[in-house]
Image (cartoon, rainbow, N blue to C red):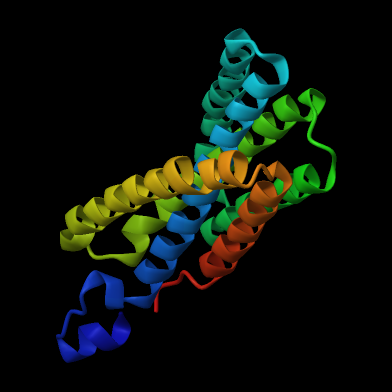
Amino acid sequence: MVAEAASGVTLPLMQQRPFRMLTYSKLLSRVANNAANFALVLLVVDETGRAFMSSLLVLTIVIPSTVAGLAAGVAADRYPKRLLVFFGDLMRAATCFLFAYLEPSLGWFFPTAFVLASATQMATAAEAAILPTIVRREELVPANAIGHAVTGIAQVLGYGALAPLALRVLDQPRLLFAVCGGLFVLAGVYALFIGRG
């Protein structure tokens, strides 16, 4: 961005490395998060045969998100944002790898959902705080539009492709969580490369 200012040339957003790294990180982590959360709901219903249990699981995702969101906002103001995204992604990766390693059972669904929801708040709050520091003010509207598009694409890929393919076609929940863990690791690596220039 310093070179851009000196030359007076503005690169398109996706050609600016910090924004591109943030976008890749967000896409990968959201695909993994959507797939893992949807998989947990499907697995609970399959395991118990009761829709009520899926409602409890959704509450396990929503309630920590609300509480952790407050702490995550404060942390995003006080601590290095890239590291918060990185550690949030690593926490989610470790949770997914542990779930993939263990035999999937009802006892693991709720703690897994709780940790994923809490770590997601830490990462997403830091991502939101990073954006205005890496793009110029006049670029915030298109940057936010790209962010919304990324969220939509991640929903299609996570909910509509990855989770159904792994669970319904391949019947491999462990494989799904291993893939999600890998996506979180890759998202964390991209997050480390977010910077000003």
